Amino acid sequence: MVINGEDIGSGTALLIAAAPAGKGCLIDAAGVLPTLAAVPPSILAGAAAATIVELADPTDPQTVLTRIRAAAAAPGPLTLYIAGQLHLDHKQRLIHLALARTTTPATLRYTALPWHWLASELKLRRPGSTTVVVDMVAAPEAWQQLRAEGLVLGYGIRVYGRIVPPPPRRQIAEPAYLKAFATTWRGGLNPPLALLHEQAAAQVGPGDALFLSIGDSSVPSPAAPAVPVPVRPHQPPAPAVENAGAAAEEDPLPAILAAAHAGRHGEAASLAAIWEGWALRTHGTGSVPAIHWLEVRADLARLADDPARSCELWMAAADARLARQQPPDDPAVESAVDRAHHQWQQLRDPQRARELGPPLDALRHHVPGRRPGAVEAVRHRLEMLDTTPPAAARGAAP
Image (cartoon, rainbow, N blue to C red; front, top):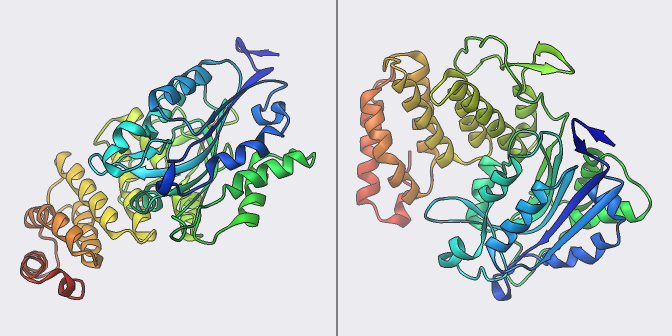
């Protein structure tokens, strides 16, 4: 079968099971490979003819990148199954997939696969031809960032998966989510992935897991917009999108907020980041639509109980509006700074409060807002943080 010159009768499935050797291992990633290997290749690849590539406990990020690049270049549908653990690079704050030789945070940047490498290879593929299914554990700092920002790959890529926090000490997590997929397939059933995801999520838990379901029907997909619609702060209409060939304005925000309020913070943040990426590509950095999605992400971080990230994003939104020559007394600018200030006040980590305090102080002096004493309140708390011992500072935050 050939559509638009592409042979979709053949597909590729890339199975990656990666985790550090030794005490740094958080998940028995390779334990899922025998179960997946028993599934018919045509089901794994989503095509009648299938090429299966398996990477078990790889050690070199360049080798993994080469395999991903080759799979991404193959014609037909591509499905990636990834079991492993995610870590955060302390220097650049980037998510990495740990490999067999990723033993310490200091070696992460040289022994793990940066997640954006994977995203860069997949974004070159035709939209709708790529699916990624993940079952992963996130190390503590990576877990906090993923709760607020989600796991993003890009427009046109279906993503289903589960991410869980680190297991208790001396325990190793099981890739139960992917095993649930394989068990269903081996039983002779092949439901749509969205339904299979719902069944696996309900079966394996745990309650605090991040479940990702970014498919064709999650929210309207960003597409070529009609004439841009003026955006009001905090309640803008979404860009017009094309749906089944007919242009119609649809707002993805209700679906994103519904996911956040249901506790699916990673899914909500991932969707918002995809729309922000569309706005940046379509309208440019500093555009009104791009700032809108930045503000949406800031509020999603608040809903995910990550006040530090929310504060950072609200300050970035205020800076972006000021860069557009909006005056300091513009209601949208004042609102962004007020929200950043409020989230900073919610911080109970003295170190993060100290880090975010100076830029907020400078911003607050430029945008004093309409609440009396706001400028003085920031300076007062900074002085307290500088003079109060760390143990006492946790309880001193207003």
